[in-house]
Length: 120
Figure (tube, rainbow, N blue to C red):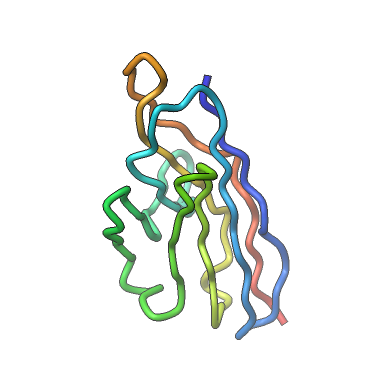
């Protein structure tokens, strides 16, 4: 079983910063990608940023220049550094990780979500 544990959310004033952390645990062979999504409505989630094991990254246009996605493969941990936060960034953020378990089976797992609130 692969589990994702998120942390780092909270309340911050506009212009402030937060760093979200996603720790991947379990019998993992490798992690191919770590991505961050925000909740739109119901079960719909919108991609905010992602990083691949190659180092390639992808960002939603609205966060480019403000958010930075990174990962520490040795620690199976992903990060989302959020700077210059705006009220419209307020949402629940979810971590997603994809990769292979020991034995070769692929996993596609989600964290429990962490609330980010940007308000004065």
